[in-house]
Length: 171
Image 1: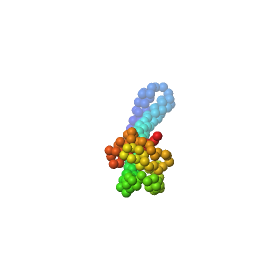
Image 2: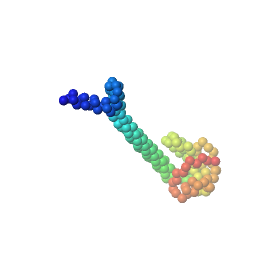
Image 3: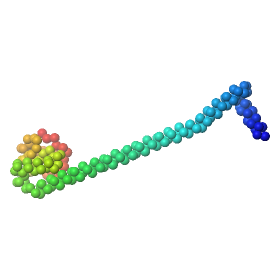
Image 4: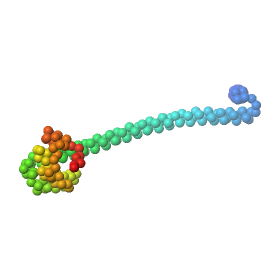
């Protein structure tokens, strides 16, 4: 009975592939079978690999953005803490020294040396009078006597007790 099924299957394949040489029909059938197996196996594999690769790239991009956001937030907090510390130093100086004491060049030079030692980012230290004229200065430039009354940052200093401006490039 089993051989009957096999012969029917053989006959069916021969009819489907066309008559002629039986060896050629088997060869054609074998090629078609290999082709079908190849398609059945590799097409889903290629689809799954492509989708997996796309999802992996998306996941990496999300992780990279999260790392960058975390790094930026950390840097922002560090900068804010540093600025807060510098504000505390400026408040301390203004509470410990009178305007008259700060007009003495030795006091300004000594304070600048102490600040520069503690905070290497300090470039200079100056005392500006209420009219915007720089009365005392300690640092690498010659700025005593300069008039800052027309500068936008100076007007903001007058309205607030403490103001942090952009870097002023000077004259």
